[in-house]
Image 1: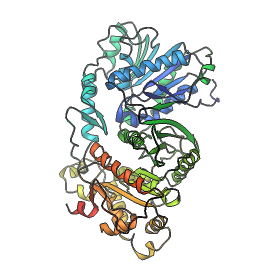
Image 2: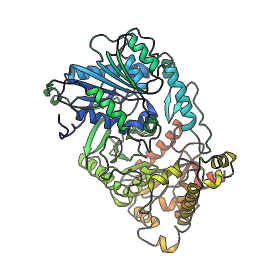
Image 3: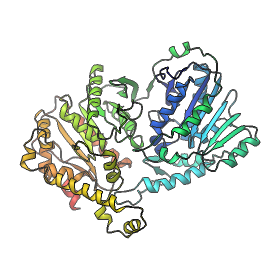
Image 4: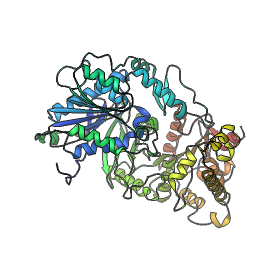
Length: 593
């Protein structure tokens, strides 16, 4: 394949319980990508997709997948770690048997590299010919220790205290490692097998020389090198960056020497991927400007209701902590269809034309409209739209513009509008990474120590204070007559939404930074807010911005079911004084208690 040839379009396929993407290629060497787990893979998802496309563009059939219980895959019937090992073996078998390749190269990231190597321990027959291990964990205990440290940084309450953990479990970035998974991790050890996982191995990362020595002693040809850009890949879901130089080395090692002409007829015989369970059935859609989404339908009777879900931040369509996938299948069990999709620049959808971040992008509402049009063409016109944080921003814009939507559930909406020219990346870095403002943190001794050490610059503080002051001024003037009487004002758009019979349900975690925005536009009275929106604002006390705990997700699900039910065309008009929302405290009560 020449550099000018188009990159093959990936095809969704199933590997047992695992959802996978397969990109055909003419060469006889296939490449399997084994990502890492949970939060880290959510950060790396976009870059991992780019690596797969680069390898496929070089001519090798390429396969990447979600482990069972993660992403868009089914939940495994048994323990998580054995299911992940089985999925890796199924991927190798797919490339050899279905794609018809003669050689297989495997690329593993972090825990995925560890599992890829161990998948060959008891494997019989043709296995891995080349193996790339990107910063592997030599033992599962090392992975557990590092995830425990990450958890203390990632899973925190609004006051920055650690989130309470469930007994015998570990939450890491809203992904939960259960007791059995933790026990199985404790038994993983790359130094234990008596034979190497592959004849040729590329090991990139810190402290890999001991493992490289072990593999050389077992007869493998091993190359080593650093992985200097690992942190930028797996530590930040909003601003993760592709490690281009490292991935170029990975591509070259994976495809070097690949030859032959593979039988492409096998690819044409692949059937569309449909994952099903007792309560739901899912299939992938491509629509609009190359967007990718998944329609989840009830296996039983459909109520006629469909929920459209918009990405939060840069989380792929499965959602932070896989919440969206789980919610979609729970909706299907209740007879409600749903559609989760990726905006441009997120997940499996193409890049934005200018390469910018999709967060709070004004033109992304057109992609939401494209999703509504697509669903309408399938006979699943959505009645309710759901979004969290930046997804709530896009959901509100779509609700205001598209009369087909009759209800919205907006979770932790930070702002209704964003002024043109706003530096979104700076706003997000300064606002959402810190639940406390600079003035509040000024009362803390460690804040001043960071200033004196030079870790925080005074110019940065001054700029942040100016932005905070401008935001407070904007909120203060939001209900002034010259703004509320404008048709484009938030109050004006909400009034038009309500006149057509649609309603807005807003949910916040306690002390969320978006709460003052609602008060600025609609006042602090529960009754006044309820009359204007159609529902009172619900505050979930004792939870984090991402609603990581299952109990909080349950309360949001109860609200969503109610909004869907009351958005049906046959439903009675919204009462002038709506009843209290279930599952949380009202805005006024939470602020006083």
